Image (cartoon, rainbow, N blue to C red; front, side, top):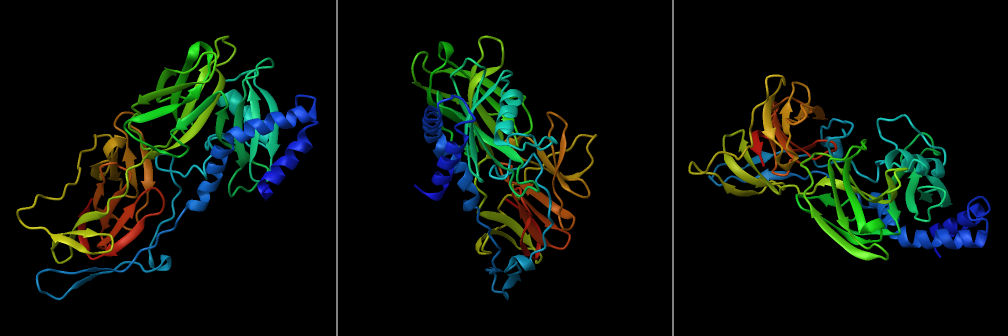
Length: 410
């Protein structure tokens, strides 16, 4: 038994007298079984932070093919040489779920001093279990698993995964990161899997009349952007599988697979809740550029010329578009499957949603851009500013790639 497991076991023993059932040995066995079923998903969420890698720039040299002296494209060799602008990641980009709470909402002032309080609030307000009852819980300083039942009579548990808020000022401020029902096991997708235009949801379940509900919700919202259903088992655990088409969005979404409450006393009786990342296309490995000397080239991000463009080549494939009269800005470019438009509003690079008319700040550039482009997925932006510096952005701080450019595009 490792240290974490020892702490969890000790915590479970300490709480056995305070939780139902009254037999402490039965309580310990009960929650241990449920935690063992769900521990893999919980630990996967907790280990995500350890996988974050910080990438720094490299020196890039643009080798010209015309026999002239080589032109050097200057890039940063360490983070201290790079001009960056620190911005808060807005809700319309790609926050990391290891840093992000599903509950409470970022827009809320709610805080919870115990895992049980956070889990019950999540069940009542997010899942619609209006008569939710707290069952057993096991806790450590790093994480907690709390059983929630939809009412006093039900034996169908939803195990809510709770942990202290990362980097919070209050160590007792608990947040919800996911939830599992041992009667609704989801094999695909996994937590933090990227959304795609075709998303398969599969696993095993048992539910009333074999019917499972499926919702996709944005962060900070209980209003689904997708609703559907599928069938699993009605009297015992049976496989289910369905393929859906998520809406185009520049947000991560939360997948909720649930059994509806046939009694009408609540919305759900049990649920598995999984965070999903935004569209998962990889960052392009090359870009088109016009250097300050007027050469049109295709480069990779090590600065190697893949080829020099000629007069026979088409213009750069910038997905330009126009903004409506009520939106003030320039350099409008389509953001692929996000269905939104990136543009420069005079201060920030922002996103405009033509469906809702919403405008969201994406990033504040170090200097005004003169060209702006988004890749096909919409996740990655590239621009050249008035100082001839080339920048890319994918949801965090902008990265200065090099200098000596007049324009660039994916």
